[in-house]
Image (cartoon, rainbow, N blue to C red; front, side, top):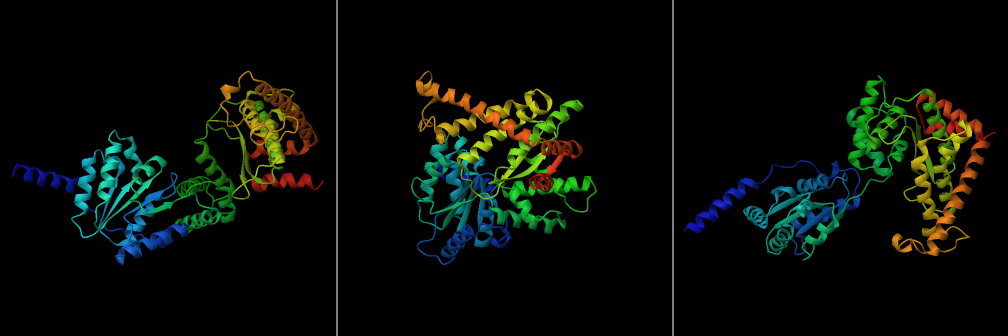
Length: 437
């Protein structure tokens, strides 16, 4: 009798802790993109509603942060029109919690249990016991469907160990078409237009998640209102995307001469960025952020870039161009080139030992070998000597090209000093002018 009373009390508290949520009104039509994922989820709903033998027991939605895993799970619940519970992975502290959750869900004829951020269980000391209980509960014959979101591969393996998750949904960063749709959706919702074509903005948001694109557009709106613009200008957008990537603008106590050096440094980089036919210059800026006093950013023309020998050589020279430009125009160079030199050396190692592009060194398949094992060996010394030779060779070639294009670099630097930012259109106007000469 005492045991039954204790069991009743435990179940009662379980119902208080893990209760059914209210109706969800969002549907698949509210999701931008993810067409293949929506088809798989629609098929799952059809099997569930028709009570087919092949109906799923579990759906796992996996993807990087910001790819709307939680949103997609809620859309699925909204479409399925079934009773449901939403549980955060952080709420689950023991195997007993899992048992209670399933017990409460079984009070309904059918039910969806949605474990949001299931990977949080991995941080729990009882993670293995929880997963074991989880798989045990899922093995029972009932009308419980589990939906889980996760970012971590190891959690996915844990919950799939007994094969209870029938459907795997992969979420990804939107492609250029989907990014365009997101931007147009935001503009329509906010009743704001942009001076730049939405497709061009979408191209510049390469590699951004849905949430980051929305954040960038929100920041661009704030900048637009601050400057009393009637629409989001190219500079408003560029400033917003820089702030998303680099944080807040900092106020460095720069002397006018230091700012001038930065402008020529970035203009030197830009010259070589124009030669990267697989990429476009997104912006050149001399606005100080936490990690730099100026920068140049490019974006890829297509979704994937094949690294050829010529492409990598231009990338190495692009890294060296800031230092070379300072030396040509001012007779010396500053500490601003430190990270550039580190990047040039890193790229040159790829050039030599990963892609084996150097004819003199030949094929050196050591990229997967522990570096410490190579210390003091002839192969390591050969690579180090070749890095030194090629860095100096590429640096001299970089200086030669900048010297040949001093007028263009100067005009770009002077324009930067005047505006602080050159967007893609402004940068290529200068470049194209000198190309036609």
